[in-house]
Length: 369
Image (tube, rainbow, N blue to C red; front, side, top):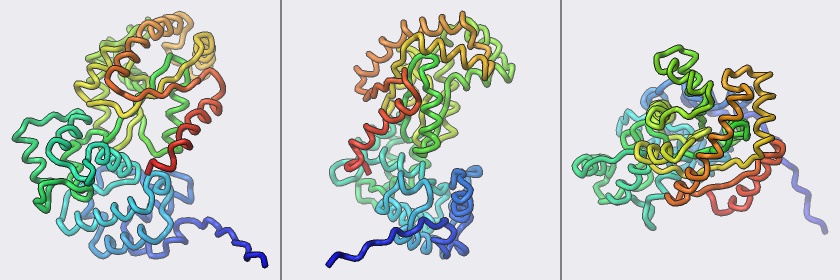
């Protein structure tokens, strides 16, 4: 006797899978409507406050939804059901305490939990040394008195350790608007950094800052800094390390609690040293390896379609030469600092580069939660 064949359950729109959302807060209702449109389902509209978004009855309901129903788009990859239940319990705890913390989004929660797990002990709790190391990893180095105050505020049950729920509860104050994790994306001009970052943003719920775009924005705004930077970029030279790291740190504070891709950074060994001093140790570096002739070809083709002022042949040749000179000392410093480096061959097509990165993910997917 053959066993009955299982029928595949159709993937219904989120709004029909979660009928109780009519009484849930605007955050989840927005997730339902935007998933059907293909948009980012939980993109924040400013610094929304938990008390306003989650009335007491809706928090209990949210826990039931998150624990038993299919998760919204963006949750499934970043947050398995166990994390969803942790998230819901944390929301209810914060509501009861009338916390002013903002509600977490899926792309924030996974990065914050990963950060906690990297520094928590075997019991999955943070002691004072663990908290100090965690804060240093995001560029915060409080003195002993400040660290003790932060620890006391986070340790709600006075157990002498901070568990995950307590860390989620206190993360706004602890992280101080810093990203939870930073990933460096390094490679020569025209190596495909922007292409890769855009796809990672679209498919992996990460955020993205391009150092080149950051500088070009200053130039377009015609600020005093922008006028100084314009000539440097046209010559294909590097902006001073202190300047670019200061601009970058200011921009990074717009991505508190998230996993952030830094596209085109660091560009020199000094960049890497200054970044670690001000922003902490990166989680990972993706190094795009590309043939120089291919990079030049792509830059000149991009000049015809995008019209970037620094995409002239003369500037491109100079930028490639500068990259050749600066890249190996930079990578050597990252290796010495124990920053994991993943090399990707980007000389081929976009799909070939993407397949190389996916192969790494498939290898590790059974142990990465």
